[in-house]
Image (cartoon, rainbow, N blue to C red; front, top):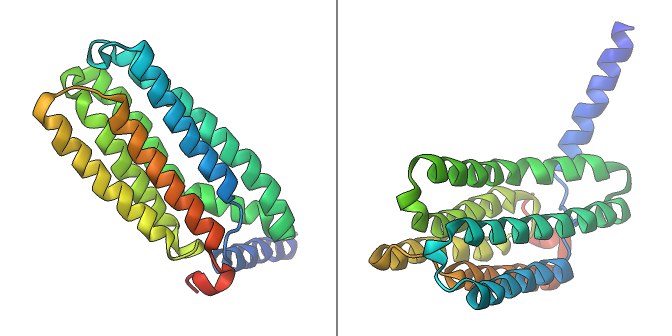
Length: 205
């Protein structure tokens, strides 16, 4: 029994090592572009429906939580389908690796929003920029298993996040466009990179 357990553990370790050195093809350009459309629609709706987002922060952030959840669901559904198609037996390991790379940034974004809402509501204008910076860190963490050029998308979110913080610091207000436009551009960049990526030749060994 011990030999069997050791053999199974060795198989799992080998599969994990193979997955770590394989280009992840679970993200599709069409879905990435669709998540950019979700961001644009959310920004437009908030522009129409929220006269002053700063006076309605709950509605503002709830709208973006819904947009993020919808985008995450779209990516998850396609990721599972594409992984089964492209990675077959390694699909589960590849998906686990992809989620593991981005999960810390996602969890940090949620917890940061909760803590700021509970203990520092007057600083909520910081949050859109901070979210973009966290997205950039998640993308940079995924570069080793994606086309190297996705670093350009990570750089965009990094720069836009700090730019949004600087801009918002002038008025301490919330705007649907400081969330919507950076994500529309960032997701469009991701979609374009994934579309033109050259497979394993553009992925780090």
